[in-house]
Amino acid sequence: MRKPLVGSAAAALFGAAALVGIATAPAVATSPAGSATTAAPAKGAASATPSFEGTVALSNCSGSLVKLKHSRDTDPALVLSNGHCLQEGMPGAGEVVVGKKTSRDFTLLNADGSDAGKVHSDKIAYATMTDTDISLYETTSTYREIRKKYGIDALRLDARHPRQGREITVVSGYWKETFGCAIDGFAHRLKEADWTWKDSIRYTMDCQTKGGTSGSPVIDNATGKVVGVNNTHNEDGERCTLNNPCEVDEDGNVSVRHLNAYGQQTYLITPCFGRGNQLALDARGCVLPEPKG
Picture 1 (cartoon, rainbow, N blue to C red):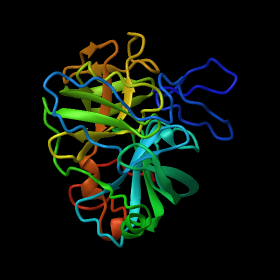
Picture 2 (cartoon, rainbow, N blue to C red):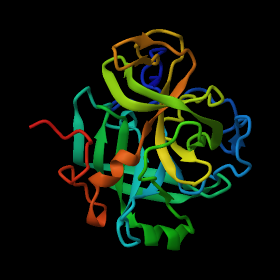
Picture 3 (cartoon, rainbow, N blue to C red):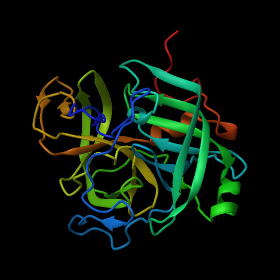
Picture 4 (cartoon, rainbow, N blue to C red):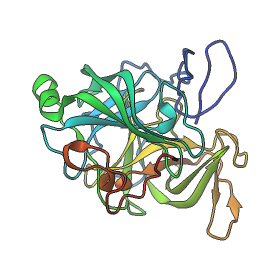
């Protein structure tokens, strides 16, 4: 995770997430931001790479317009990204943000990566960097209104745990670029600086993500559903430091995988939102962290 500051060489979390009151910039682009590009897929990858439809570009990260298992067309649409991509600043370890008023615009993309238009949010429904690294914004438009205005359908979250070996695509709305690889396995615990995440998705080395791809949906090529949200990779081979996550197994053994990238699973979100896409952390099967107190 990386957070470059304007006028400073200091680095922090991978998504180029903003600090309160401080303008930020993403990592230097390797291709023009206005053109959609595709990274080389993993060997044997499916021929049908997921398109950009339903993805969004944030001011500092990537994201996606998502539907849950029980979402209806008349529900307020949700935008999924990383917790560390909040423009208010990154949540601390143990911090959970629920129902916080905000004002944020997202650029919605067409299938070819061109800009379709803007959607607006006035509330952070849920965000945390504890156990996982996610943010869910409630927009001021319904799925039906967005489809009618822009012709864009939301991506669907898979309600099941992702499977090892499945071919996936990380779709970055910020860079308008895709990264194709497969699920290499799962990290029991992934630790980076003060934060620890559970059961993280480890990609094969084909997915060499970069700053600005944070919050990108991780899409199962076979189903077209979102199984994760991209959030970090080990940049320098260091152990458990900022921008250098390490894996910790069930016995407490620590390992470092230089240049490996990771995402957080999203099936855990589904049980925690009920009718009307409203957050229900006390619902049966919901294991997302709750606010303290």
